[in-house]
Amino acid sequence: MHLRIVLWTLCLAYVGFLLAGGKNASSITIMMVAALIGAALGLGLGTMFNRRAARKQI
Image (cartoon, rainbow, N blue to C red; front, side, top):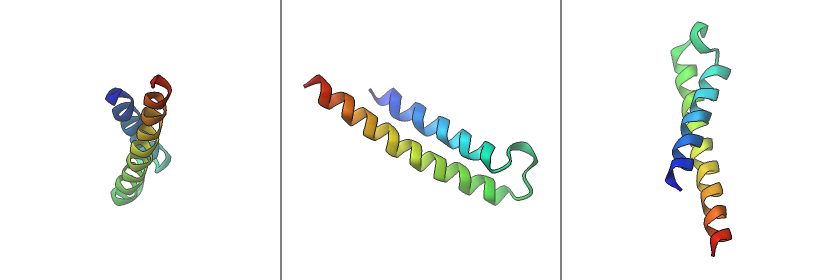
């Protein structure tokens, strides 16, 4: 169950990094902020899906 939260967090952090420019971005701060925003969204989505799966099992 907790694996889902970890996977969503890591995947969306990586997507945020790529959307910020990936390897050739001009500012490392922008890449870090985008990765943090992606990680926060991933954590939220992972938690939401984890709770939904737990509700369906009851």
